[in-house]
Image (cartoon, rainbow, N blue to C red):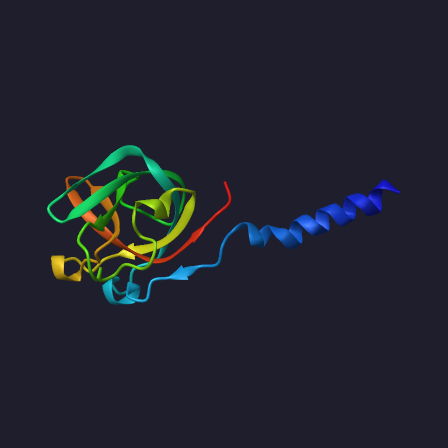
Length: 144
């Protein structure tokens, strides 16, 4: 008698598992800022780590990294965003500090390089002594 109940419980868990993660939110400007021919990287992170600061028209938020699928130059990274009102090219709704309050999966790619080709928000990653910028292509909240 217990086996059908156990089987039903396992089946219910398998059906519900995809619902634990939210649907992907796509960045409509992402492709415009991404360097062509580079692979996407999946990063699960949340706000934490070293804190953050603002200055010069932008802010950074330290992050705690849970998992990385793909290759990043290092795990020394922060989330950056504009502190200016108005349009934020390369960003999408919810990219301010509250965006990373919970575990969030980001799909990122390196930005094209120059300041004009850098989105207004994304990941800033130290690569040796150089800061590299990565555009967020898609994002979704994930379960803890």
